[in-house]
Image (cartoon, rainbow, N blue to C red; front, side):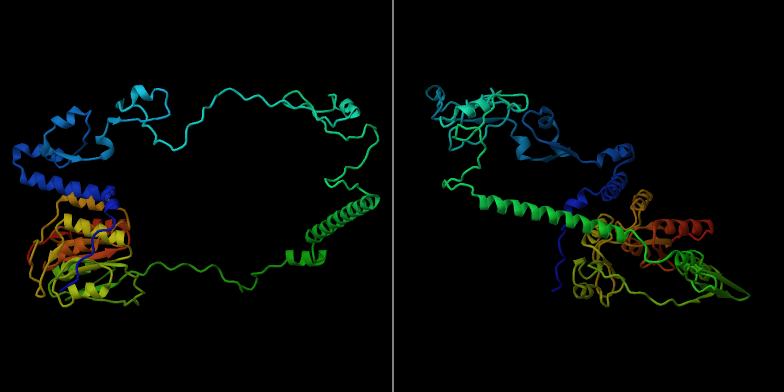
Amino acid sequence: MPPRPTPLLYADNLVTDPYIANIIATIQNHNLSQSMPASTSRLSHTAAQPIIEIEDSDNDAAQNAPPASVKRLHSQTAARSQQIVEIDDEDSSDADDSDGVPVYVPPSSKRPQPASSSRPIATSSKPIPPAPVTPSSSLSASSKRRAKPSSKVPATGHGRVVVIGSSDESDEFRWPTSEQGSEFTDKMRKDLRKSLSRGARRAVAKEDRDAAQRNVSGGSYVDDGTEALIAGLFINDDGIIPDPPVVPATPSKQYVVTSPGNMTRTDSWLEAGHLSQTIPNAQHRRLDRLPRGPKPTAYCHVVFAGLQPGIYYDWTEAKAQVHRVSNCCHKGYPSRLQAERAWLLGHALACIRTIDRQGNLISRPVCSFSQETMDALFNVPDGHIDTEWYVVTKGRTPGIYPAWNFAADQTQRVRGSLYEKYATRAAAQEAFTRAQAMDMVEVLTRA
């Protein structure tokens, strides 16, 4: 039994993608215009746009709208525009009067917060005055005299100055005592002076070392004669140092088309293929064979046409769906998001096909694209779906495609079809414009 395809993981991103939405809306409008009669074809543009409306109890238009043309999105937050909230507060003073009575909360008011287990604390917006400072009873008279406010003492925010002085009434200065009552001795004062002196000497020495280092780093290690010699030296006199190398341009393919009495060289496969088909007895061959570089690693593989189409992480599983299957179509993508974009658009454009090993279609026959769809595909930026662009000059729908599966859908099972890939949309547009100027674009439907 073949493996089952992996479901979409970036559905939210795909829904909000403006390019994907534009392509899908264009396809829907085209399908509706083809299915509707001529008298109602003018309404096809607005009919493809689904009307999205959110149900609300206050919205009368939503209730009166016809259900056939309205896609309703049920939202729990939008549907509940009014609530009946019952508040039960045992500590409230009005508990006897309003116990068990429903309280109506209008939609514009705030929702009541959940009840807390702790009782609320009454708060006031009035400023709290500072607590009065009571002078200690241990303050002496001399301390009280020193505590008088003066111009040199900064005033506090409350207009008070509090000075905690010594318990001794004399004006003689004394060293403070510790909590245990041991006095600050002379030996301790000497040790303190020594430590302060050592710290000052160390700071001065560190400043001298830093200044010396700054002077050395700002100087030069060479004399004036050496500097003059270096300044007058011409380094590139003998051409030892070459000029910067020129980055070579991307080599183009070279083809030659030979016919009886004529030979044409070109760098475009579209032109070489067209000449070999239109000139009698003409043959084409490629002159240069460039070495193939390493292919980028594919993270996801999408099978668009095979035994069981889908998105696969493992190439072994994807290969089992396309190996020895005629007219299969698959592509590797560097990211899962790009793979899902191509997969979603493949479903919208009916490019996902189930075939057997002989290449016979089992579902979804191949169809051509409309001009509106081609314009929507052209507006996709570079690298949005695929890393390369494809130009189809001969096929079911000639044009420029942003992914391989779209070009393959228009060229497979078509005899004489021509296509070529390009790195950017600008290069693809230039090649297609050139093909149109040379009258090489042709619509083919024969198998």
